[in-house]
Length: 218
Image (cartoon, rainbow, N blue to C red; front, side, top):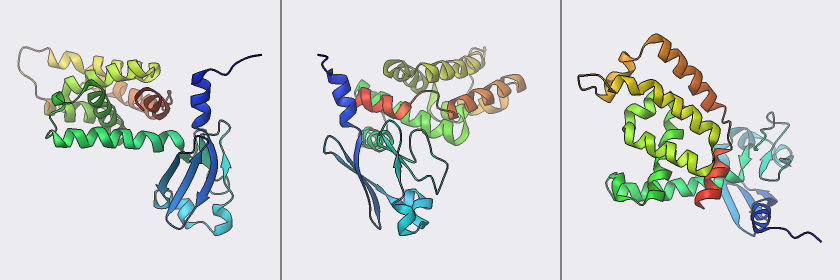
């Protein structure tokens, strides 16, 4: 007789047991009994759908997400994902701590520093690419994000960000002092093209980053 290990039990506890939709929220009850709420306004197709369309949801194959196939092509992780909803409060708590320290992240614990760095990485790369992230937050923050990606097991994204960082490193090794704001105009056309390809590779999310963040930091 085979026993189910603690990791398998934990992962099963995160699966969705029940879905409810109110006028204001999508409510997921997990097998552990934890209840997650997310505003329906975040999912405009569900918000604008008829009552019948709203209830025509299906779970993803792994049970960690919800899709509405009649409203949108199903996402492998779900239009609504348990991992996204569990990741958000982890980021929010770390950002709150950073704000209380007047954004001096050196005052934070290593765990909170990593969460802030990962949030900044996701927010900026998805908004404007790696150069936006690097120029906004600097080299130390980039190195913290790299350490965090390696620690949580996001191997593909670690390699992508490492290659991005390698592209900008030479520009800071000149005889004159280079400000972060100079980078976008200094970077060569070839390096800029490579950077864009790497940005696209990051946007594809080759690792399940929200899940890895939750499993490591929750």
